[in-house]
Image (cartoon, rainbow over all chains, first blue to last red; front, side, top):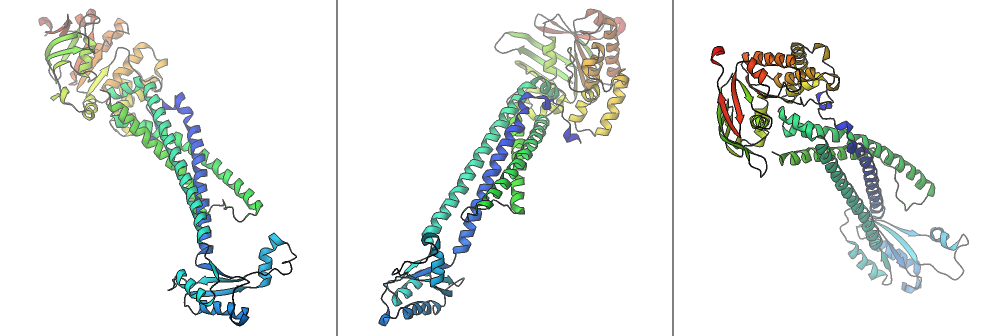
Length: 295
Length: 225
């Protein structure tokens, strides 16, 4: 176990004692930021999946119908859609379903007398449909000029942009945390080199190359990084599980789930390893740079 | 082995403390480096163990000009040089065994061989019972022997000792000199810096005398040559 042995008394450094704590905090924040990215991606995926290839057609109550036959107007729109070759299904939302959708706002009593609702058709496009939404829109307006088509594009675009912003922000946070970790390791390593100047001089005099000394600092940084990193990621895991439990109790479908699958837990587990490797490489390069400036 | 040509030594912007030093140390030779305290003996040794660059002139070690050495070449030359310091410079956090083992481990020798060689050498210098002792628990003489063992464990071609008798009493000093002579007989070139004229007088070897900033080579006494 030669790699575990150190010729330099780095373990006794006061400067190195706080490094696991700092790395632990950084890993904790980085893991939470990563989880936020995963959650945002969850939401974006869900919205994309749920809304992809769907749109709805609304026929206002006062829409002009041929011979005043409103049923014929609605059926005509449905037929136009189904005959386009690009629509998998076109479902007319009945009054009972409309009442149920409005219940949170209007209560269980239903619509007040005299209030008429637009007819609503929910359309599901065939995957790889030959006609675009624009073409379908043109066909529908030929049958029902007053029909309005809602393809959720604006809302979906806004929400996806929000999800992407969260991801970007999390990425920036992770980047800043990484930069802070690198700076801290450089500081600790330079302090260590200064503290152990005499020992390093002796080790040099008996034939050690700079890389040998760098190797000792490298392993020290890796050990400290792993200790702090594992602590930080365990704490982050517990935090996420706690938050997920709280979110589950709120029953708010718009909020993202924080329950991670095996791959995502693995990604989270890589954070302390990645931070430790960064600490290790930083320590190694710092030693080489500092010693390289000497005689 | 060691060639100095018109070498000058200066620290910072100060005056040259050694000027025009020229001498050659043949392989397998034994030299005392003598002179009063502060004359520049340690500086000459530092030039030899590549801890100091000459301000002027040329230093050649093992056929290589020190001026032309790249930083990455220096450790490989240092592995051919053993140094015994006056203040021992042992690593206080390491045991005697680990101190002596350091040059071998740095050179990448297998751990099983390291233990075997180090234990054997510590036995040879009379420290068989102190293999796992830390420097703080050893006497001055014992620490000196650990330092010597560290200097010779990798079988250096050149052994440099800076005032090795300075921190030990005369009897131990004499025993140390016999130890150096043993190593010299095994082919190691030895340079011992000392201002202890009693020790120099007792052993008949050539001398490098440092006086007034100059270095002069003085031969061994004819009766003992």
